[in-house]
Image 1 (cartoon, protein in one colour):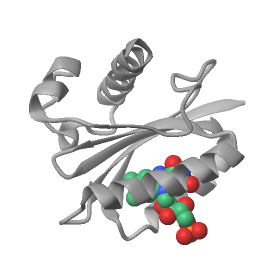
Image 2 (cartoon, rainbow, N blue to C red):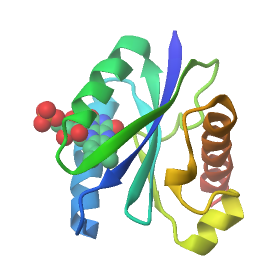
Image 3 (tube, rainbow, N blue to C red):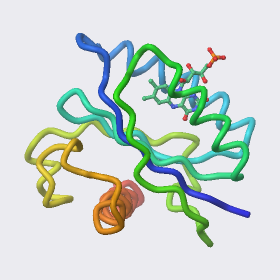
Length: 138
Ligand SMILES: Cc1cc2nc3c(=O)[nH]c(=O)nc-3n(C[C@H](O)[C@H](O)[C@H](O)COP(=O)(O)O)c2cc1C
């Protein structure tokens, strides 16, 4: 069965573009080999990530991601069965959003505003939905 997991975290202070590229390289290699797809967003020193795949593979991966010293202060926002992947074409899509871009996609002004209640986890999902539509278009 197909699941989607969304969490947010705080990037290690001083995270550079190179750090982000390293993260994506590791992520894409593993995800490709394990049928994981998804998208990583970066805004104001925060990560918001959606992972799509097999339930147990996702849980094991999330466990590993949480031990990664490149970020901390994790909040699991959403873990649900789904019928369809939003990011079926991406081993890990990536977008770094400035304040203006974030406001075109969502009413939140920072990822830290998103809490793990039903309404806000669906807000996070809506944000990923809007971005996936844009990635297809562009
Ligand atoms: C924000 C963030 C997102 C990550 N996403 C993934 C991912 O989607 N897939 C993945 O395999 N590793 C991802 N990683 C890397 C893992 O945390 C970890 O470094 C990698 O799986 C290697 O784990 P290991 O050193 O325990 O073998 C991510 C790391 C960070 C900081």
